[in-house]
Length: 287
Ligand SMILES: Nc1ncnc2c1ncn2[C@@H]1O[C@H](COP(=O)(O)OP(=O)(O)O)[C@@H](O)[C@H]1O
Ligand SMILES: [Mg+2]
Image (cartoon, rainbow, N blue to C red; front, side, top):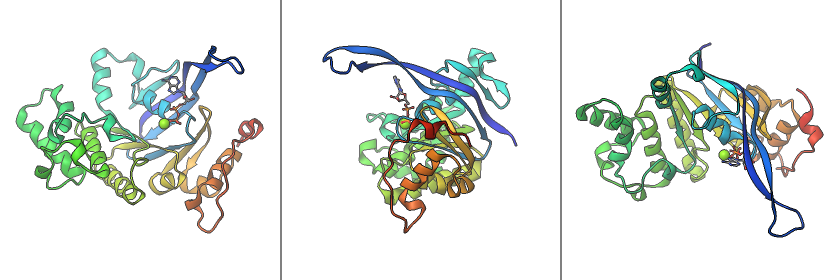
């Protein structure tokens, strides 16, 4: 088993403010452990899903792995090398090999740029001549099944459908030929009918290129459909982890059981239960 990336004991604390109860206009400082002591191993060529409710720390974990933020503690290893020991140049090169896509493709697409310029832009920092850049832009658009690419080159993001926009965001991410793709709720803003198309596309890209995918989603059905392994997060911690089919079929941890029970499409015919916040003692139990 070759690891594409390994995070050991990662933690990230944010300072935030909260309203003082009962006293209007007064705030107090509060520290939030968005990610607390998370160890995560992403194998080359595999899809690992990170699931959990909103606020459980999934996006923060994604940003830590993408080196968009530095952890307060813990370490990152990339293909066996400690990220903190890399030189500045090596770090830069490494960051290019870890790409992210987001729920909202507008986050990675500049509305003023044409599709061609959007997809080409990441290449401008590299020493690649114009001809090769053009070839790579065409190839990336073909890879995300926007064809023929010529039809899309001069369009702007607002002229595309949501699904097409997400495809352009994926093209922009893969044009650098990354080895890791972190997809943070990549289909949440799309119509249900388009979601499977994007997931299948990611799957085909993975099969062809051997890229490792971290699929962040609050949707268990999606994780079930598209991942090899799954990690369940709650309150910044990992509560359970394992092979997707096994874990979702037979969850051991009470929080995972609640999540599975509240996901209607996993078990057709079963009544959907409301996801209520589990009591702390449920979260503390071990698996
Ligand atoms: N930049 C930030 N500043 C302060 N708090 C943050 C920041 N980013 C995330 N948080 C907090 O950290 C926790 C985890 O957030 P997040 O990683 O976005 O969870 P998820 O992606 O699972 O919804 C939440 O309580 C959130 O409010
Ligand atoms: Mg999130």
